Image 1 (cartoon, rainbow, N blue to C red):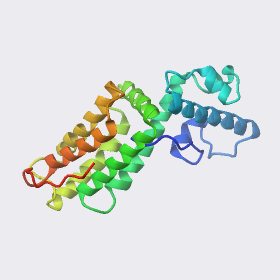
Image 2 (tube, rainbow, N blue to C red):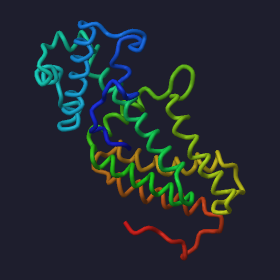
Image 3 (cartoon, rainbow, N blue to C red):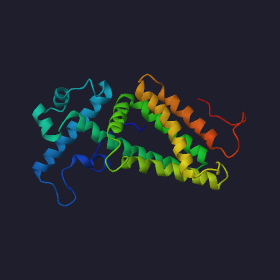
Image 4 (cartoon, one colour):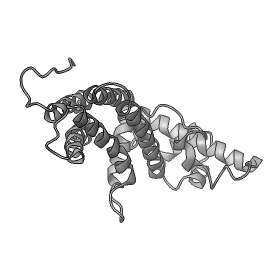
Amino acid sequence: MPSVETAPSPETPAAAPLTDGDASAQPLGRRERRKLEVRTRIYSVARDLFSKQGFDATTVDEIAAAADVVPATFFNHFQSKQALLGLMTGEVFETLHVMISEHLEGEGSSAEKLRAFVSSAAEGISASRGIARDVLLEFMRGDATAKGPHPYLERLFEPFVSLIEEGQQSGEMRDDYDAAFLAQMAVGMMNSAVTNWLANPEFPVETGLVDAAEFALISLRAEPADASFERNAP
């Protein structure tokens, strides 16, 4: 998972939900700018508090006080505390998508690129453990929609399919199964570490994620797994 420490700004995709309507259509007036400033401040403060003390332990009154507004102003901008977490979910998954593209579409072998991504994701979780877990739980609550799985999942999954196809073409990865199926299995192995963490906040998800990725690479390897397979040191 990515870190969520960086505050959103109007230039980032993550901040887009904080605006009302299409801000690019015309310059915002003074009143609209003031509203956006207050809304962004509330969001930023809430994220900091969630990260430091957890979502459940943070109250709307605390967020309002830290943002230097009254609670009524908070509710003028956000329907609930849960709505803030929903916005953070979108922000985190946008960042995760960028991270996946950066590592899985970069230079190196397929195994090297997957390891680089997993290492970066583990570092991000370690840097923002509390809020990252809250965001993932919120994502899972709203994952399935009437139209099917959350659109974030397809965007995050496609680069893994491409990575395995590349590994198959280079002879690095097995080709006796379709790349999409192998990607599904590999991602499922890594998700198992995250699922264990969601069930038990004390689970060492960072090392669990790395171990799951290494096991996935053994399963993806073109040759049968044996004792000579090189495993990264922890």
